Length: 249
Image (cartoon, rainbow, N blue to C red; front, side, top):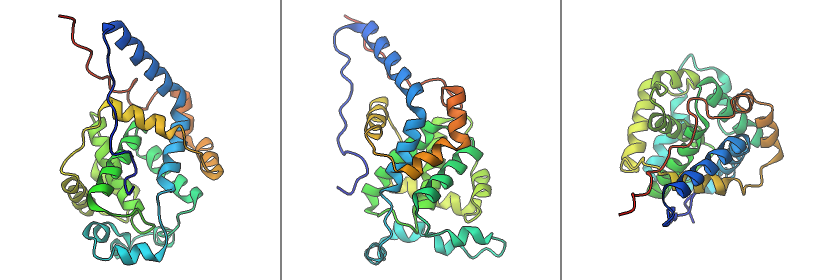
């Protein structure tokens, strides 16, 4: 399948046992979330990394894909004051580089782990809709755009586009704005992620066999240290709760 995620995800069945069973289930999910955040971070980066393609055939096959062309990073390297390190590492897709890039953005931008996980779900929708392949030339711009949207959906006070452009000067604020609009139009503004989808995706991630370099990078990162210190996401205490079951009639 070309999709990063399963196309069909079952919803929770609340059953007939009313509010107590619902509350117990939420407590269980919250405890799992708090205990597994660092592992989920490793797994999400690993999941993201193993879908990045580098072979020339992908670039040839994507030459007529408008979204691939719009998110190809090389066209944004024309800025005279752009530090050379951003150009030199454009095609670097080693586990270590991808991990450090993602972790640096998450830490310096004060992003929540949940926003990162949601952004990967958005990438799946974008990938399915546009038939795009995640590639060494597109992964950074796609990651940042989806993360920006995920943060806006998750946080009451999200990161500004201008702030993210400062973290990654390859893209100006105006360019990032355009990429955000193209992304949203492509997914038809489908940015709702219900709790069951989020929970099932977390469970799917926990089955990932994480690359040793990714595990090492995460464990040594400031972002993981913050997760371990807080025991909760940066800006919230729990997963977004589902609606409670209807009262018995």
